[in-house]
Amino acid sequence: MNNTKYVFVTGGVTSSLGKGIIAASLAKLVQERGYSVTIQKLDPYINIDPGTLNPYEHGECYVTDDGAETDLDLGHYERFLNIPTSQANNVTTGRIYQSVINKERKGEFLGKTVQVIPHITDEIKHRIQILGNTGDYDIVITEIGGTIGDIESLPYVEAVRQLQWELGEENAIVVHLTLVPYLSAAGELKTKPTQHSVKLLMQSGVSPNVLVCRSEHEINDTIKRKLALFCNVKKQDVIQSLDAETIYDVPNLMFNQGLDYVVLDKLRLSTRKQPKLKAWNAFLKKHKNPVSTVEIGLVGKYVELHDSYKSITEAFIHAGAANKTKVNVRWIHSEELTPENAADQLKGLNGVLVAPGFGDRGIEGKISAVQYVRENNIPFFGICLGMQMAVIEFARNVVGLSDANSTEMGDNIKYPVINLMEEQKDVTEKGGTMRLGAWDCQLTQDSKVFNAYKEEFISERHRHRYEFNNNYKKQIEEAGMKATGVNPKTGLVEIVEIASHPWFVGVQYHPEYKSTVLNPHPLFVNFIKAVLKHSK
Image (cartoon, rainbow, N blue to C red; front, top):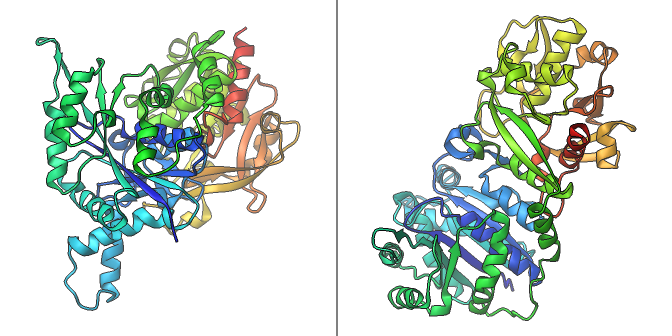
């Protein structure tokens, strides 16, 4: 018999309260208590996945080992839990409806009228329980995107109601995250928004078992009692969540509030083993007490929304702590960079990372950044498109192929040093058709990347359509840019570096996706190490 327990995290009053961080923090605490746990995200939008969404719309698109393009919250889940997620960890309304419609077209419903209840809700329940049915997890935490009261969230809330009834309340509970705002004019915290939010939830047939209240001010016992009375919970089930210095403080704050204890008690699970958070707090100590500071320029075209590069900035936090260094990021818009102003825009930086992206907007600015750091021996890290820009810049200014470019930028490229992958040439659909997920790479010994990874074979996550064109490999290598990482099966170049430079590495994959609190990514750690050395 499957004994997996389910915790649903819903949100009320307003979006962006931090459901993902609360879910990840709760998961971290129950993991520390000895339980196997995973987290999934249910997104109410009709896109099949975030793969076709503009980063300005939804922040970065996170990629798993099995090639799923997912919500950025899955990055938080992996960074907190230090275990990989998969396709099953992110479900969208689009995917739900696509599955149901495909079944209807095949005649699987035997001519019945297909409806939201039971067909859509049955599919949602099926997706929620896929991870639980593997038998790998004691607890599955499910974050429901959006806010209670949103029309698009209603089928998910109904599915939760049905599951609670089917599984029993000791096997499926609801943690409701809400806002308790402070009115400075009145000088007091207001509970009415939370009351209304819970009332909405209860109108859908779901009663929260635990309330987590976001607030800027301490929630005293009087307010907790009032919330408990109006929201049908006990006073100890009202947990305050004050604004934290960093997201990595939240597990400790939630432990101090007893969130994990309350949740496990309601699930009838033992709370004997106390969370130690030893390695976690060792990281926090280094993160909060740096002995050095460096400034890294992040050159990208979505820099107005920092969440577009969430995994990169978090990887800098992990690598900074590993080097006892505070990493300050200077955001540089690639569209505003030119060969003429590069020196001024990049002045004072200890290192530069040229970020991933798609399309031709801001490309020449990225190339200008690469040229400046290459010529001035400033440590450089290029990721995905950033690596491709490094190859183009080198081909133009060192190899002498002045018209070198990527075929992504146009059809009639004289020297296509970056070219569309062969298997991509007949692809017309955009969603889920890139080279995605984990691919192997063999490293050249005595290279900077080999010294970082300390192993010959690695596996990293990809998300791209264009590749280094091997027809130009000989010319580029002879000029001094070496291919130090190659896919052992296809021969495709994964990594380039310049040995004569203090630290100049470009990678076709996305190392930021695999950096976690307990396992900072070796390339980021090595890059910051080189930046520190260079800055001194």
